[in-house]
Amino acid sequence: MLNFTRTRTQPRANRSMSLGGMDYVDPKKKSNVCGRILMVSTLTALCILMLKQSPNFNTPSQFSSHEEGVTHVLVTGGAGYIGSHAALRLLKDSYRVTIVDNLSRGNLGAINVLQQLFPEPGRLQFIHADLGDAKAVNKIFSENAFDAVMHFAAVAYVGESTLDPLKYYHNITSNTLVVLEAMSAHGVKTLIYSSTCATYGEPDKMPITEKTPQVPINPYGKAKKMAEDIILDFHKNSDMAVMILRYFNVIGSDPDGRLGEAPRPELREHGRISGACFDAASGIIPDLKVRGTDYNTPDGTCIRDYIDVTDLVDAHVKALEKAKIGHVGIYNVGTGRGRSVKEFVEACKEATGVSIKVDFLPRRPGDYAEVYSNPTKINSELNWTAKYTNLQQSLQIAWRWQKAHLNGYGGAPLVMSA
Ligand SMILES: NC(=O)c1ccc[n+]([C@@H]2O[C@H](COP(=O)([O-])OP(=O)(O)OC[C@H]3O[C@@H](n4cnc5c(N)ncnc54)[C@H](O)[C@@H]3O)[C@@H](O)[C@H]2O)c1
Image (cartoon, rainbow, N blue to C red; front, side, top):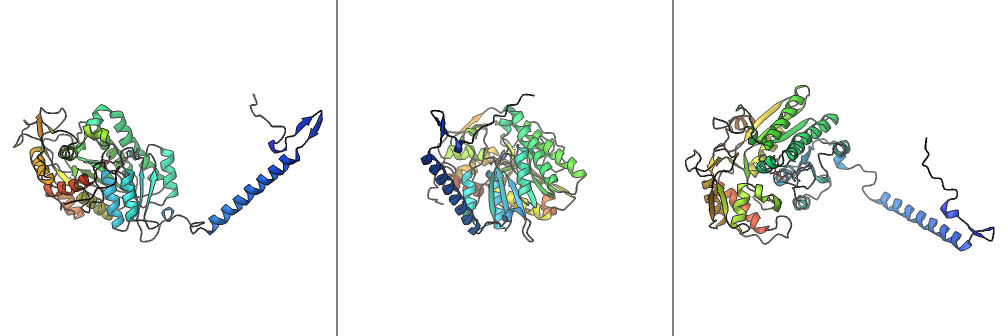
């Protein structure tokens, strides 16, 4: 066997010079080395002393052990739009929150807002990590005592999923498997999973109930459906409490103006209708492109069910409260009312006070005419009803934040006006 180990015959500090065949140790160097050793030892001793005097020395983090009466929730994707609003609500309701996010699409600014609102020890911690890294995820679970997981983290644009499907299967399906395995290995028994109406595809019958067959038609919807299937299969032989929430189209922002929706500028082209309306209203884009005016709907434009983020996070808290060990709950989260794109644009014009220029274009492939929910099940089983159902009001709240944060969380907030 080859031996690659290099041995040093003399330690560096004791190396001597050879003078005319005689070994000679420079006394100046020797005293230098001694001085350095003394300095390092003194500094080390000082550091240990200071650490011992610090209040956190030897005190385990409050996040690392279970505490009676405190529910510790891991919020994945908590730097993103919906996750940050959910974290805010959980913190307001006295939950302990750990956010894990890789900041690929979320905003550190949102975390800063939450940390400023809840600075007390043991309330909120942020861990920068990628859920695709199973080793890192496992470490997070071994160092923290979670009682429940709200799994929001995902890439979430239908258009992008058709262009880069592998990213979607990896980020959504495979990462959900990583989270589930960590939950199972560390005995975390409650999962609230963010799913989507895109798992239903284009059903023949409206409104959509939880029994409507799931036939997703794009990689985003398929990846979420696969993640749901994995969760449900795992659940068959476990005592986990699982709540799967299938959201419709999410709009709005925190009514108190602390958080908002701030997607990366490069994702604008895949963006959602509210973002496009606001971009048109603030002049970032010259006009709003509406694709398809010949659908079989009363005004020819697509119909969607818009759910306000405040109502959505309320559904999560209710789901968490009602989650039962060994049970699965699957719920649509929508208002039960469909609005056309034309109606939406009119509401957006009213909310922003800007006469947005609209460019009507031919249909975009893959868009379906009409999608709206039947929320009866969530109404009766979780006692949840959408309260923010005035489209114009939801958009007005969101617009206030957008106007005050033209650079998203990047710039200093401007003065807010009503
Ligand atoms: N916005 C909607 O209309 C809508 C509708 C239905 C379902 N959903 C679902 O809601 C969830 C949240 O969506 P959103 O609109 O808040 O999106 P978002 O992009 O604002 O937030 C997603 C967050 O997840 C983080 N993330 C992504 N991949 C990650 C990874 N590998 N590791 C760690 N963090 C990662 C991102 O950085 C981001 O902060 C998603 O699961 C999405 O599929 C959203």
